[in-house]
Image: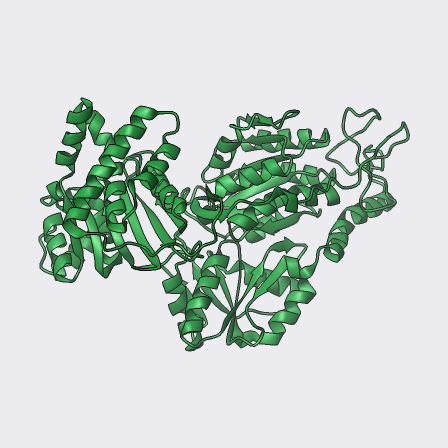
Length: 631
């Protein structure tokens, strides 16, 4: 038995792959295993290749994904052709034997570039391009073949439940569930629990999918035993959540007091709002309004209006949507509106790669909209951070009366992980300075402090809001002395936040200050950086990681002191971007120039195995390493 397993499921978009992933993640979690999985897919509703990459462990939730995979479960021939090089020697391939005569050049959904590579690679090995020839070649090189006849298996399901052939074909995803369950030794009760969670309230689907998965699991066990069984979990007992990044941010917002969210659907942000739409009631007395607007401009405008009435309000979007929001963001800045923008980055520019990840919007986020006004920018590195930051974003917005941008990325949004259930009692709610009994002489923009007591629209006193510069009441002015006073009042919010938010919370150092190398990163780089550091430590290389959590106000003095302790030759920026924008930000705020970088901009995650090799290349003298692994 083993303590960890890396595996992958692949198939056409829209064919139930996500269902398989959800069932298996729940089944593994129910048995106490830590799970992390990432779904990679094209911006295509149905047909193009999609896959889910898993890592399961008996020792808690894995920090990141890696290659090679020890099990590849293929719904179709395209999956095998796409990922055959990802399989470890001695790994297992689950595939459809009835497709062995299928040639890669006859698969219409496969891209031209991949076909050209396959033509070259398979030709060099003397293969004829069929699935059968590739499977045989893999077997000769140590891969264990688990060939199943999918149509025959589905025919048995159809016969038992009197289904039409077309109906039965929709259950291919449960063949993969059964095959994985058989090889891993997952018991039927755990698999059924996963099926019940996925198809809650639909007993017919629960029964049919459980039957099919159990039948396949028995077939696989008879042929191969349980060679990939994991050792009993060593994790602490207790409840866990199996959630995506989108899910956990939505739940954090509810716990943090969200009462209004407006959005326009965009990948990968939309799933957060879809989940929030299920929470019309929050407790006995509170309600939650989720409004789908005609575009992103309307969404942020609606959020501003709700925030002015005193509601905790937010929007969720991605790069193209945020681009449309920036004028209204400036309006919120000049009017000191406490609102939250949850920003999920994806590949750009323009429409770019809608379903692939990126961290290339950092500088855009910091300087979006014309003019100068304060905003707080915080970035989450994992699911628990995302939950807590979703709460803290509202606290910061209301405490400093300024827009807050909560930065995440596609990798975190679409990654499912097992996490302990957060304890809400550990969280705090800070509504900032409120005007308890505002009278007729109330001044919303009182100049006596950077933070003026806030009254809500409709609470009594008259208030004026305009996109122009204004006086303490809100009336338009262009008086130069008043402009200086009002502009400085707003900008000093950042100075105040910089003094009050501990720097060690805004930039977190993992590892010793005397390590051989310091990796510098933010967002979802955290998990893979810490995992790579663990691997390298086992090889005698000391690696520390500096995790940037609050990017504005930037903890300049603290970060400068840390970086200077390592020196320019021992600091490496790691980022999903071309420019390593975190290094540019560090240079801007501290004057310290980070010369070395490890970057990836394919839209795929950074994997542990490739980051480990990249660090070794940097230690060998390279200043810039570009990563590219992943289909």
